[in-house]
Image 1: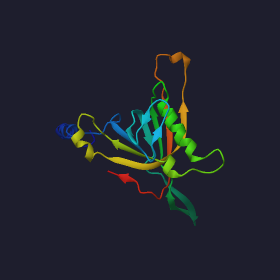
Image 2: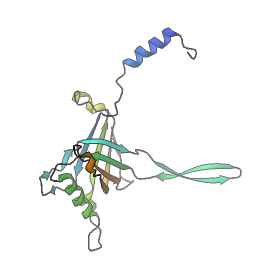
Image 3: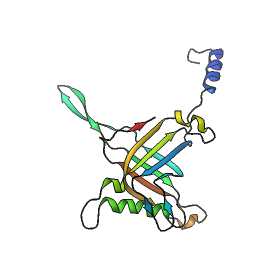
Image 4: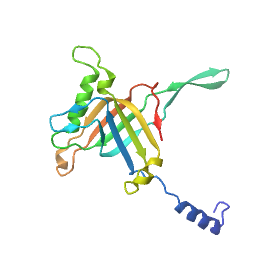
Length: 185
């Protein structure tokens, strides 16, 4: 038992059972757009809560340039890479979210070769971890990351053999500027 008695193991199990552990499926995703969007199917407000089936991102990605110093190596940190958020969600039959994402994307690089203004295409994405919908009073104390992001890519997956399944979409956003402060809670 690794030097732990059975009584110690029982006590540790009781103590561990009392902790409210974060669950992988309990998260809250909030998207705030800088400019309002008027789509064909419906209006998307400046701030909305996106029903996402999955979210993944690298909250910290430090970059280093390793140098040889004699027979040793020194890790010279040079900064950090932008955060990339991948959101898997579902859309309505009108393609409201697809229209929204494409509208944002078209504002990044214009057809005439000019670049758009960040206020027209940047969104703030906040991910609250371990958020339990039946305990709204405790949501303020949950860990939260909030980033200023720009659209990067969108991926659709079609499969005729899965006719009864709902279509999922994967949106990818990248951090607009690593100088911007990340809001954490």
